[in-house]
Image: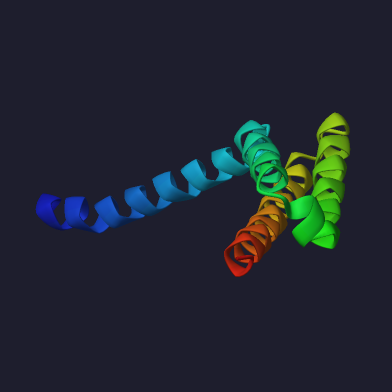
Length: 105
């Protein structure tokens, strides 16, 4: 009987732990996401994205600015989403800049 209870409760305990861990990750300040977005934008700019993909780099900077505004308003989930989008777009701009460099003889 005890063995059955232990086996039955273990998956429930793991599930509850995973849910709590996931919720705690969403609740905090998205400092890492903000840093990742800034670094991605900087890398894209350093690679020449301002010339190769000006629209994307401006769009990424706009998302980062919105993320910073959301942080100040303590809308952390929104800030995290906006910072992640800024990073994604900055990576696209970086790829465009690298492709432009490869295409130039």
